[in-house]
Length: 429
Image 1 (cartoon, one colour):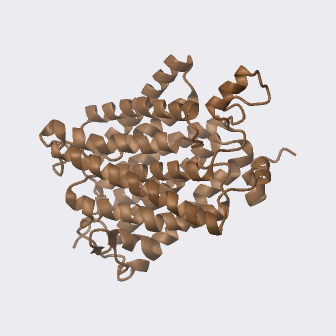
Image 2 (cartoon, helix red, strand yellow; image 1 turned 45 degrees about the horizontal axis):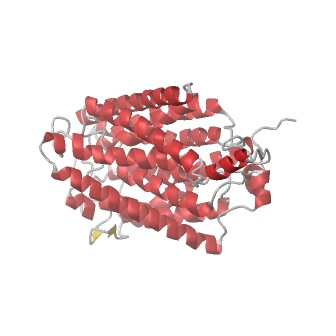
Image 3 (cartoon, helix red, strand yellow; image 1 turned 90 degrees about the horizontal axis):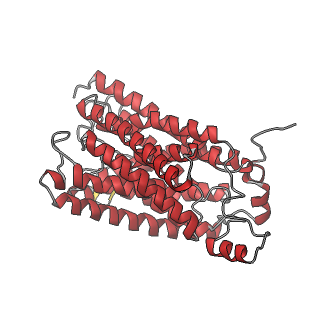
């Protein structure tokens, strides 16, 4: 089969753009943590990228895109890229590019997804335990979910569930897994539950810190830089998922930009109304929420729908994040669930509402004459959410038995930069 040079060029570019998103995420997350944990947060993202690259090569790709075993998981016939030559094309997934390029593009998704999770347990998780969990999670959580949704014989795909670029596979899976991680690893030292804080204020107990006063971001410019680079990379994340240099890729890129902009603005306005000032962090986080939300729908919806998705994501994710911080016992450090979990759910359900054949003839939603699609999308979200949360919860419990997840109180006070890596972000001498 003859490949298409334009398709190869676009998907190669998109592969590089998606790779950039991992260091972008590192800076986005790194700027949000305290100075003593900056290096550890940055290096966790890079180490995860390296480890998952090998997992994807040795068995991950085969588990996801290899011949299906009952629609549940792929076999190992493609392990280590067995039998795949550099010129071979897999017409099932991308007829215009070599399969090895399809492998490389999908690798970047597999690598960034577990990196998203670390934001929920930042500043207190042991590095060795994290890497063990990532290997297990990539194998037993990500691979089955990606197979169900993206393998042509995966059971959710056969049922008719659609996920253009990973709203379900990446964001819902990571968001619900992050929630499990936050619960298992527990709250950071000094993170005071709001009822305890109110009691302390009633007692005028100055020894109990107000929520958040100890946890100021170390570098807001890093947050803005990370968000900007994520925005840039997301054009490859969503646009590249067309796997061709065509009109669907163009539509996905424009939809991505509009959703990011709408969410940044809606988060900013809500902060302005509620808190009196529009924060730089809020605008940055809002943009990321919008991109997470539109990911599932980017290649299926028109531009008005993309704006609606972004506006909804900015508002709903903001409200969930504020509820989590102010009214729950959950210390999801960087609000991974509110941003990626809620955003992914909004986008996946939006496919069932707004998908139109005018953009992509593959699928139509409720507002375009196919109400059944909404039910299928909700089912896919429910199944993946439950599987990711319960599976991650059990894996974390298992890892904790053999390699404690949490650093000691002394190591947490010292900071993970020194206790885990023996390095500091800034040498002030």
